[in-house]
Image 1 (cartoon, rainbow, N blue to C red):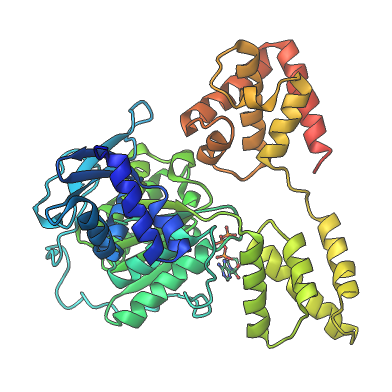
Image 2 (cartoon, rainbow, N blue to C red):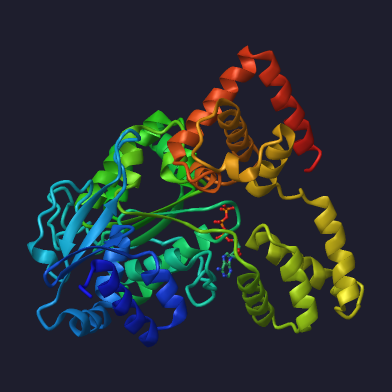
Length: 476
Ligand SMILES: Nc1ncnc2c1ncn2[C@@H]1O[C@H](COP(=O)(O)OP(=O)(O)OP(=O)(O)O)[C@@H](O)[C@H]1O
């Protein structure tokens, strides 16, 4: 039987799977697809530049042995990298890169430089001022060691570790971390900063929240110190800006941040941004900034699964020097699911209850303490729940809602589901689109606008939306 790209890659995968951990295999190899085999050259498609770099840095040896086994010693590997769309209207495109020949590659189509030239001299920095002694504003409690790894944050954590080893020297620049509240963006950003300081103490690292940056900028403008302000930020080696979405609607700050960003990026400095939304979902920010946010790697931290929640609780318990039974920990991890800050808050409430009332921490005490927390807190409305409610209301089977059909009544139900998912959940447009029929973020945005318009102009439609809204609101 003649070999195909798929058959060759499948047997490579078998070999690789036998030689690395299952976790690593699922994360790094499952999303990779074989696309072409021409003589001894196998082309594999990877989901992003990040995957390409990660495979090259960590797994190239094992890939090489697998390929040699299958295609002989002259086997060659080419990566086809899926690039992000530059404009909503554009189709995604791919860029081909041969393995381990980074230096020779010239890639015209890429939106951002793939490889950062090291040692670029900055003509704007006054010699002598170059080594800034500043307080990095890093929280020493937020390290990699106590940032528990799970399915929900694996990609972000691995990328963070890579960046800490070579700040500004990977293609993950900027590194854009986004998630709902309390899921670990700030912790991870600090961990990267601390790790950079640990590995290269000479690097100037600065953590700043966008809120603080805005205040500082306003003060600098008032006191005519705008240039000093810009100059200061341009001298940082690793700039971490927390809650970048706070820049939304602030024209002057966007302008100044744009210049600082460009300068740092061009000088091979590392930029790390956190946000409660993905770059495409941030509103009221100039397109040129949004497109820069997408240059490097954007990655989402998701809600942790049960195992990760349990591991986080155990670590916290150890840190606080307390002991809790397995059944108590399991009960907390099973019931507090929304975010890690709430998980920590629950544990603190239990400890406080036990201490004040001088009681032992039993399952009963925990149930009592958490029950009030659980009933007092908002019930979670999930996208699945919204889809089910909309489907029941319009009497549409859920698989039809998720299908590609363009039938008017189904499209309408789908758009309403997207609209409510945006309204009632913290999910990004991309994630909503993914869960409701595998659509892209632009379709979700369009759906939300259509529902807004029809709500104003179509009475019947307004009744549907009002009815569903009441049902959803009663579930909160
Ligand atoms: N993977 C993790 N392992 C251990 N602790 C974690 C992890 N992720 C988050 N935490 C803890 O959860 C708490 C909230 O995390 P953090 O403040 O980083 O969230 P955030 O996503 O930045 O929230 P916000 O959107 O409100 O700014 C912190 O105390 C942090 O240490």
